[in-house]
Length: 229
Image (cartoon, rainbow, N blue to C red; front, side):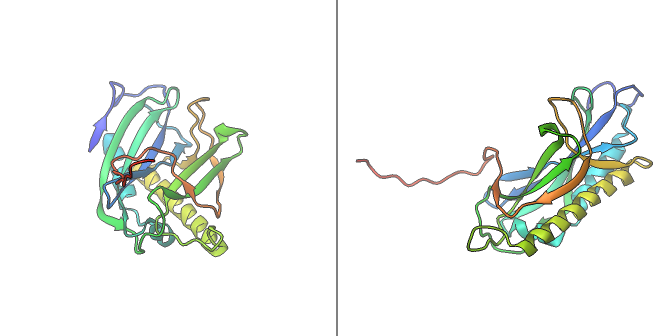
């Protein structure tokens, strides 16, 4: 699905923009999930966006191979099904263009589920900008991950996940640069409060499993009841 938003598409203008990527997925119970890194072009994108380039970027990201350890986190209960690319205005976050593409091959984790659907490994994005506007977090589904007797992820696994996050996020950066020739993209943190997009200088992964802070989409809970008292 491709969409051009607003009359500004197709003409040149002074506004600059950033890109919000959504890695899209599903769960066997019918739930959906997404992971949403932001990329800022160092050369900046003008309002005159070529929709074909937005489509190409979304398809490339939807087709990108997920590194082994991140794929294992998904478990057999979760799959990566596609990707969406949104071009947004730097001044007010307005949507300028978008494309949603399905993955040519659905990517499903190899391991049986061990944790609950909202369990997640967190990749923290750090910039040189102080305060909350310079920090971001990506919640990667972790139903398939193994934790120790203390409930933590072991050090070797954390290191492997950190390397995989760096590889995957840099791969998406390459997909964007390929779709938009001549422009370099950097992983960034978008602050809608300050309308700033500081670029990442490091990523980090901790050994504590977190919970995706969002409402369930379509995952219906089954209840058992007893009369009380």
